[in-house]
Image (cartoon, rainbow, N blue to C red; front, side, top):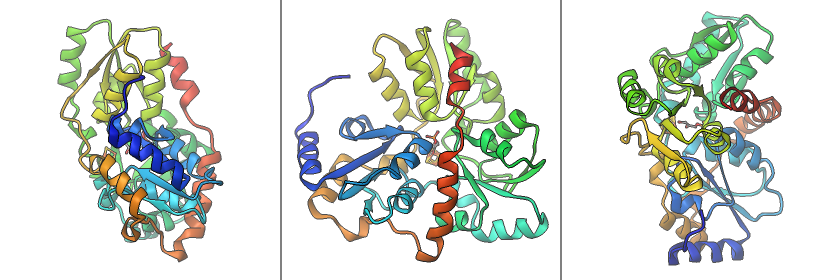
Length: 320
Ligand code: 13P
Ligand code: SF4
């Protein structure tokens, strides 16, 4: 993991200290960003970290906009900056607040659970939130036999199969363009070539790919499985940023991407140069805000989500 830092990375670290800034980064960020971040994790871990930023003067969130919005809501008075304000997750665009309201009308008394990959506006009309790291637990915790769920239909299927609860898709076409590219033929070919490898997939992958995997979980669960498993070889069905992280952190293991084209262009809009620019200039147009009237409800459901149990232990146990 140890390697010589570049001049740019050194400058970012110097200024980060001077500004008393905290850098949070998602697992899909490029390695040069991950190496200067104070914390790298999945959406759930980043939401939990965002609620513990007291003592810092500012937060820089290297991820997509909905993640930085969660941080802005949870960090209260501490300003949150995003290096690339236009880093929008296309999955989030499948469901807006109007769609949630329309579905609520059609299914009265059915709770609405949305994936964190949604705008603050969509969250503000929803009853509960989940991430890929806790979706089945959150749905089960409601103690109901039917829920409205969105926007990712593959994650919905993952929850349906694990809980047996009726899951009504808010938008059946909702998908992540990066994870929808993985297909069963690729996985089967790679399994033939590497029969000793463990296949790990993200729940945003299509259901057939989830079925073909030995383990399905959030990005950090995938990372922990590679780090903790006694196995040596892994086939990974998720975005390439995490594949690079796994290989760097576990040089003694062989990490094979299920598809090298799995690159989230939105996540990659963040760059180290943009992080330096924020530290130098504190540009107002990189400040992340959520409309005042939405903040209280979104904070309430984020805090509820952060307290709920996650799937980590279960999945690590399954693969060891
Ligand atoms: P994780 O919460 O598993 O990190 O996933 C976030 C995401 O955007 C996956 O595409
Ligand atoms: Fe959105 Fe998919 Fe990118 Fe994750 S990988 S941020 S779900 S587009």
